[in-house]
Length: 242
Image: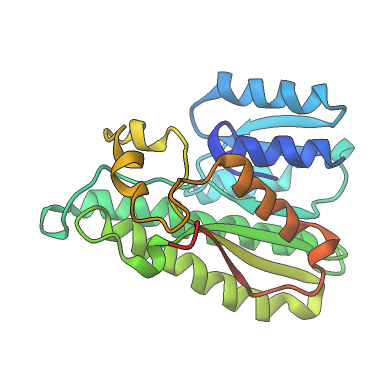
């Protein structure tokens, strides 16, 4: 399962998994046509693929989706907690409680709810283990001053969840890791009203460029693969050195 899989990094991850032979269930909140396009691309690579609408901050909806996974896709073996939001740039002095609450509901509560349901399905006796990858951000360490400290705080929480859950479930055959992304060339910047952010921030990246959705997806897929079978509780920076 890939949450937030209708575009950007989630879509790239879903398609890369499909090409590797995984069955893929992706979730989307509102972009149904985008999600259907990703499903079509995954199916074109010969994979089983479906999309389901889900607000990851809605506990009842999360329980319903995880409780009704299509049997033909096989048991749940992997979860990518990719769904997340970032609000337009703002200084802390100008933040509203409503904005902060929504960021935390999606980026923190949503990760915990989906991880909870995944563990219930993956852990014995119901399951035989699996892997969870939480998508984090370098903002968790950099703090994003003058832009979105609330988002940075939410991603720091994701890294803490990763470490705690990894230790908690290691004995159940479940690996939990985090991919901490730097500046990525996706449409999220334009959607938040700052289409020029890539050019503005790129000069601070040692490699001199933003990353791509494909590069992010490759890191996520490696952490789901048996090639990383001895890796859990790790935070992998994919950030061009920033």
